[in-house]
Image (tube, rainbow, N blue to C red; front, side):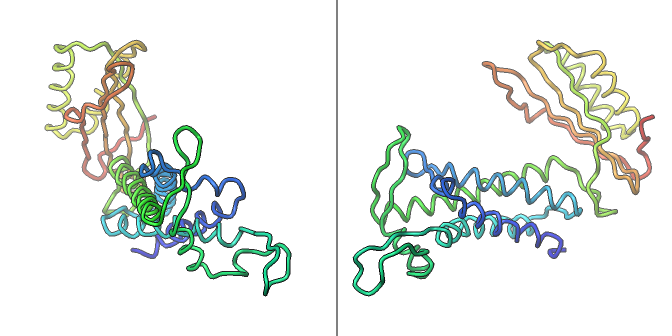
Length: 281
C-alpha cells in the first residue's frame, strides 16, 4: 500500500531541492512574519500537500492516517532539501585567504552541509513586515527555523486532511470516485425555507434512495440560482465507475461581512449501495 505513495514523497525532496537552487527565489524561502509566523513554510507545505494528494488521487492511493504521517514527514524532508539546494547552488568569492587561492568557489567546495547549517543557525537575518531585515542570534535563528518546519508540516497535514474529506474513496474497488455533476444552489436566507430544504434533505438521506436524492439536488439547483443570495449550497455528485457506488457531498456557506463562512452543522454526505448509481444521460 505504501509503495504507491513513494513517488509523491520523493517528489517532495526534488521539489524542495529545485526551489533552493533557484537564484533570487531561494532568498525568500525562509520568510517569517513577526519573526515566528512561518509564511514560507506554510506555503511550501500547502503546495506540497496539494501535489502529493494529486498524485495519490491519480494512482488511487487512499489517504489513511499512516499515509498522511509519511507524506508529512516527506514535506519536512523536502523543506530541509530547500537548504541543501541553497547550499549546493551558492557561490562565493574568496580574496586574501592564506590557504585558498583567490577566486569564485561553490560553497559546497569549502564546507560541508552540516557546517553550513550550523553557521546558518548560529545567526541569521529575517525580513520584517516593513521590508527591512533584522539580525537574529543563534536562539532566534533556531526558533525561526523550527517554526518554518512546523509551518511546513501543518500546511501539508491540513491540505491532505481536507482533500481526504473532500474526495470520496471506494474501498471495495480501491479507487477514487470521479465527479459526474456539481450543483450550486444560491438563495436569500429565509429560516422557514432553509428548514424546509434540510428537512426534506434529511428525510431523503434517511430513506436511502439515491435516485430520489439526486433528483432533489437537481431540482434545488434549478429552482434556486439567485446570484445575490447569501446562502450557497455546493453539491458534489461522484461515483465509482467500477461498482457504480454513488456519493453525494453537500457543503453549505452563508455570506457574512462580504465573506463566505461554512455552516458545518448543515454539511451532509450520502453514499449509495453499489450498483444504485444511474449515469446521467
